[in-house]
Image (tube, rainbow, N blue to C red):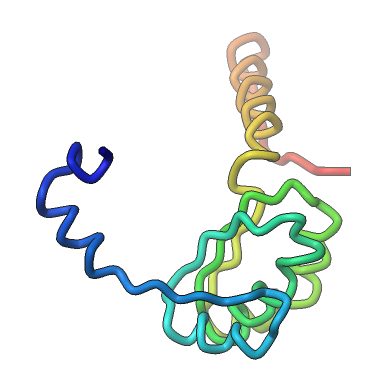
Length: 129
């Protein structure tokens, strides 16, 4: 149904998309995944259990990575462990992009707007504790 809505051009494109199957619990499958991919969007959770190796390999091989985790301690650990590798390889590692973080993102936006409207001031920094 979605393909029909998008039209024939998109159907042709989707028919030619390669599928790469990888098991994040089997590290031997990850190199082939990240070496043949420019970017990965992960919904693998719980990320602490299934996502760490994928972040490691993306950082090492320069594959961009985004996920929907809300596991802040895990995210901080990934930054500590792989930020340098990602900078060296050019990989952009972006967590907290969705489901678990959207309510907090909207709250910060709301409060930022209120600060601007009611106090004529700008939010300059948000710190998670």
